[in-house]
Length: 81
Image (cartoon, rainbow, N blue to C red):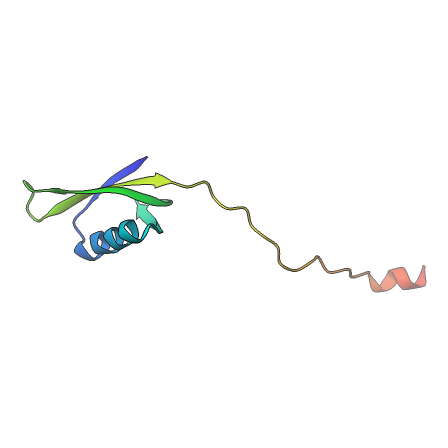
């Protein structure tokens, strides 16, 4: 699980929508990027300005899919050998 705290209301709204719709969300914090499902969003009522703690369950990265086959190009010099 990946847990971080934010004070950005727009970011919190985006995570709430992702949680409600069951979609994955991507969080960028301190140079690291985590993509996964939002497990919880908890408001810290004692902080000023308002802060939220967001917990994300990371997903395994998807393998890259090559949609085009590799080109079959021969060197021009091979034609004369």
